Every structure is written in structure tokens, then in C-alpha cells.
Image (cartoon, rainbow, N blue to C red; front, side, top):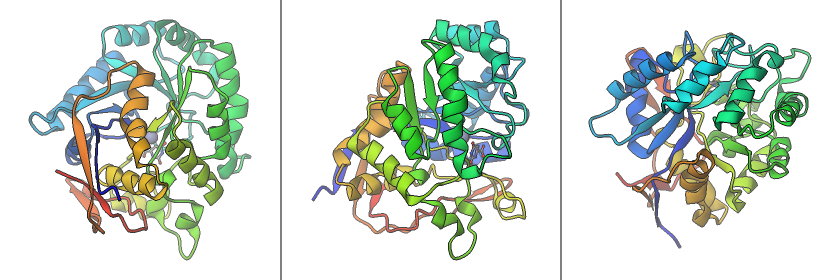
Length: 346
Ligand code: DOR
Ligand code: ZN
């Protein structure tokens, strides 16, 4: 039985760090285990320009413990007003690693997102030309479309046409949740990748809704049927070279989650690596964990893998931390709802 695993230090290819007091509390949690993270730009107001991204990066760096070794990789929030020249310049000078597409109204702080996808075509063309990747929140916002179908409909009606008219654009389907997305990734070429969250590998919609409503499991895209979760687990534990970890760790303080209209987002950064070791161990695939967390992402983004390592140990069960205190209030930590035998050796 394997009870110790040394892997290259993982990266988180989709992370929300927020700002202010929450940033101060959560940044050290990611820096503890991860080498780098793609930092989402959906602040209020959003990270729109290269100058915004540099200022936000400085605030993140100020929130990190000394000599943490953690590198935030910055993104810009795509709007219908985004200037292609600013985006390309921010990429050339090393400020930004990717641009994020939020369909307007799809999720938290997406109001400034894109309503008419054709209006951003000049930016997409410039990104394809410059080799700058697009991170996509892949859900349609049409209120007529059932919330459980929004990802599959997006792939067919928005993503596939977008890729067809923008040859060479590197696209990451963020936080995929369906077997439809898995199938689309599998038939895609080397310009297409997908991130998978920790929670979507561990919960299905019953966790949210059966036996009482559990707002702490509510995120977007919302978790789907068990069949879809199984397809995600199979994708990552059998190994796919363009599927990699993006936790979508998305802290909201408890009062904002536990209200009549609660916020979407699951905060998983502190427990993610232990949870993933558990998932891969249960699938008999511990030898594939490193590719998912530490190799496939850098390969797609054209970056070297981390030279540092992370050690995981199986000596539990370990009680999970329940919440993280922040200056704005407590944030509940993801509860995987099962025994976790693994921990990160610190
Ligand atoms: O659940 C989510 N929370 N999904 C998103 O797309 C955004 C995120 C957030 O920022 O809270
Ligand atoms: Zn996100």
C-alpha cells in the first residue's frame, strides 16, 4: 500500500483570491501548497487593464508570507470595451498569463462580462495571434435554459462556433462539470484544455439538495448528476494530457452564503491536495495525480513545471478544518463529506 507520495509542487490554474481582508486570509492558504495560481479577475470593480492587473498583483504579493515562493499569474476580465492593444501589451510585458471570458450574468461579479460575443472578436483574434490563452466560464445565461443544461448548451452554441472562427486561439474550458464537456475536450485538438475542480470530483447535486439544502455546496457551474461526476473522475484519473487542476476555490464569508439568495462559490484551497490524493487513491491512480496537479497545466500554458516538491502522507483519518477566520467574517472550508486519509506533510 502506498502511504507516502512525493510530487512536483502543484499549481492551481483557477483561483479566486479576492481583495482586502479576505485576500489577506486566503492568500497564505494557497501559498502553503501551491507554486503558482491563475488568479481570477472578477473583483468589484473587475481587473480590466494591464495597469489594474499590476496593482492587484502587488496587493496579492503584500498578502503573502515572506519568501512564500508563490507566484500569482494574472488575468484580465474581458468586456465588450476591452482594447486588443492593451491586452497584447500586457501579455508581451509579462503582466498577464490569460484573459477570462465571463458571459454577462453567468456567475459572481460577471455583470461587466460579455453580452454579445461577436463584439469581442477583435480581442480574440489578437489573442490568437499573440498566443495568449482564453479562460472560459462556459455557461449560457438564457433564463429559458435549465441551469443543469447551461454548460452543454454553451459548448454547442457559443464555444464551438467561437473556436471555429478563431483558429489557433488556445482555450481553457474552466471548471467543467459534465460528460458533454469531457467528450468535447476528448475530441478537441491541442488548442483546447479543461480545468477540473476538487469539489466537482467529490460531490454531485444530491449533496446540495437531498435531505435538506446545503448552501456550502452551491457553486457555478452547479454540480450535476453522479454520472457526470464519474465522467470527470475517469477523465483525470485515467489521465488526459490537457485536463488539469483549477480549484475554483472561491471564498465568500458565511453570512453571504447563508442567506435567502446565497452566493455561489466553494472555498477548497486548504484541503484540496489532501482531497485529491484521496480521490486518486480510491481510483487506484495515485501515479496520475502529479500529471493532473503539477505537469499538464504548465505544459499547456508553456511554462516549466515547478522544481519544488510536495509530500502527501496517508496516516488519517484527519479531521478537516471547518472554517477560516477573515477580517470580514468566517469562510467555511469545503467539507468533502467523506473520510480523508491523506494530508500534506508540512
Ligand atoms: O461558484 C463560483 N464562484 N463560480 C464562479 O464562476 C465564480 C465564483 C466566485 O467568484 O465566487
Ligand atoms: Zn471561478
